[in-house]
Image (spheres, rainbow, N blue to C red):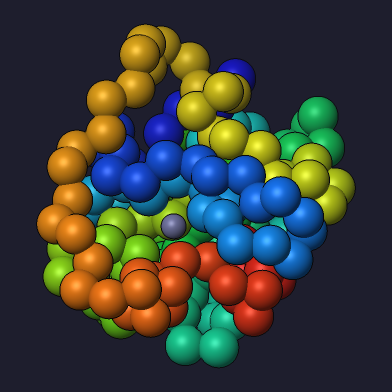
Amino acid sequence: MLVPPVTFRPVHGFDAPASPWGAGHRGVDLEVRAGDAVVATADGVVLYAGTVVDRGVVSLLHENGLRTTLQPVEPRVAAGDAVAQGAVVGTVQDLPAASHCTPRMCLHWGLRNADDYLDPLDWTVGQGPIRLKPVPAPRSRRIRRTRRCSPGSRAAS
Ligand SMILES: [Zn+2]
């Protein structure tokens, strides 16, 4: 089971895409502040810690083959590092443009099993029923779409 990477304040839930390239939200957004510590959701090994396009990304491979991806994160680990559940892997980057919750800041938490995107909350211990915070309506469809995971960010999600 996983633990949340930051204090558990979900803003956007998981929205499974209808196809591998379809629209959707391939993860969960948790409200954060820049500089918040980000921890490993489970024991694992760092697959990737670096920059994808404009944001820091940390990906972890867990024993059961699941992969966690966290962004935007300023990594404090390097690829190949072993991490224990709850260990700090980085801090939230001060990069509002990379947040899916602009003007608020969110950490995007993705979970994959091979090419399948999973809802991290299905794998999270002790969170009970999920209540999402209300978010202001997006100003337009176009803006909304740019804040969502797009195929272009697939590698980072
Ligand atoms: Zn997101």
